[in-house]
Length: 481
Ligand code: FAD
Image (cartoon, rainbow, N blue to C red; front, side, top):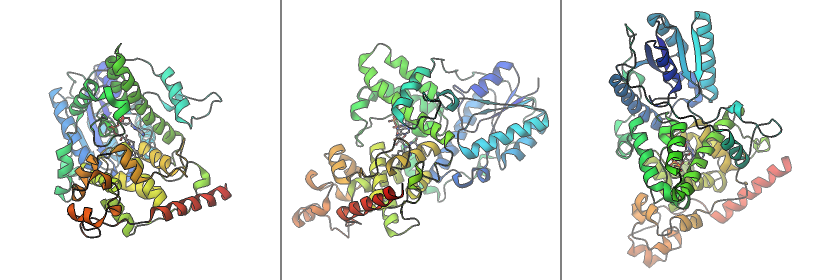
């Protein structure tokens, strides 16, 4: 039998990998291939943090494939050129892919189909990264859901209980392996190398680590998930997002294991169902991106197209990026992002609101920064979430709802544990001032060893004026609509 090429892009795992499992079931030799095609990704070439993760992820995949008696062929370059050469070198009969919902990747997958057609080779796309395909779900009038709650209600009726496919123990290898590029040719190493050291101390990429994380979460934190998921100082969420974004675990595996854990257990049911609902937001974002492929660039609500957001870069944007705004919860979040490649969801909402509303900066500036620095950077989730905060997306927070970084901090980090971890220069401040050092009396600051403007910045803006400016900007949009 001629070999089947499995394009591993988007699903860097062996578990619950329908494209791989189907090829294995035919009895044909399989050739797992990963192609890094930066040029075709266009503006959405993988950012720095995802590149670091991918490097580790591919080396973990190489090891798992070796254990299964197989290997991984790596290529750097244009997908079509690389595949053409590989199909010919391997005399392959088919190419299997895991379906992508991102606009650029979809174009590439269409081109793979055309190539295969020209070469007389079969090309098949398999699901694997969503619980429901975008074509499967429509609202009562046959349209696209743009509001989450009804989307999720309907989705739960449609998601079937098909069990995930377990990782193959053994894969049939081809008689001759096509030549592979060395992992180093993919240029995934961070530059400078020390940049990723703190991130590396925080994460273990790879599908084995993903399963461990899921199991640990389902044995512990899931119990308190619904109540505790908004508190950034606690380890109360799954932190599975980078594994999902990198395709190291499938949503079906997560769904299945969570349902088993819920079983008849009322205690787990509460947190478990809420956790699955968050996975539902991921589905919703991908469905939105599929149906509205412009959302990474343009507002979903067209009345926001002319909104007077500022663009470009200045020292205030730099202060936001570095966590030097003078607002402790913002600075803690942005530093958590820089140090670990991840930020707690509640804090993502607060820092995003600060950028797009208080600073009146374009949400795309934040989207770009997150794209480069998040290990879980995901085109759909990132675009949909930024638009949600900015008020211009589907089912979005109204524009006039502006998160107050001080009261949000006091509510969700009341003792300042999160601030003290990521903004250590404020560690000695009493709880009363930890979210507003600029209101602390001189004596309190002195006792805490803080000199505002020297050891910690003064606030980069006056919130009251910023709020009025944001609301005035909104009013112009109202007139336009
Ligand atoms: P859990 O609470 O354990 O949730 C489980 C899974 O559900 C997550 O891993 C994630 O896949 C999904 N999920 C949870 N919340 C959301 C959400 N609001 N929207 C979509 N999916 C969700 N998430 C990304 O995966 N990539 C991004 O690039 C991204 N950018 C964001 C940008 C902004 C401005 C905001 C406000 C949110 C963004 N999110 C993004 C959503 C969310 O913050 C993360 O998915 C979540 O913090 C990941 O942590 P967790 O795995 O512990 O989540």
